[in-house]
Image (cartoon, rainbow, N blue to C red):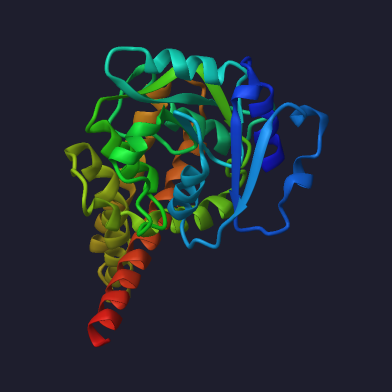
Length: 308
């Protein structure tokens, strides 16, 4: 997937001799020979190895090596449309726009899960946003320096933290004029479960040090609320209270139903309601587990620090 990502950069409708690609990886097997292909003959590639614990640390390391006045932070599993760079430049020329990102599209044979992910990513297009997903970000070098780079203390949610900090200096735009395919998109619910647990572990920590918006409340509270209701339903069943079991189970299903209806009605796409509800039935519990896991890790780290 990394090679496919770099291929899509090499195929930009742009003078690629003016593009510098810095690949930062923890995998020491990756070197320039990894990209020994005719597609890269005019593309300057630098491979840097970094043992940082977080994505933020690796991105910040890549930034220190970059020479350009404009910076693109690209995930290692995305395929950019050929006009991506041109559209990103044009977007930054708009009044007070400081960061731009392209919209997600599905691959050639998308699974139901990928189609749902794409619909979620594209709920708001061609408008100003408070946050941008970190898969493809484009901005002037000065703004990376102004916000101090990515937050290295966060394992996940670093894109929310970073992009909101940049938004304090201007507008963020998620545009439809260019696209990307997330090659590494979740293909099955087992992978979704595992990744959402991982993604959720910095949910609460990411609130510290940045502005907290009311629009974030539902997405933060719904997973925890669902987990609480499910636990209450189990306890009610164990103590022989079927009426309360039913009540708490219905409460647990409400976020799934509400979010599923919102996506079904708001996406404008022919998505299966059953598939959407399956998605949220996995997504919310996994996020709850991830959030609580991250909280316990944080509390444990705090206790160890105090003990030392």
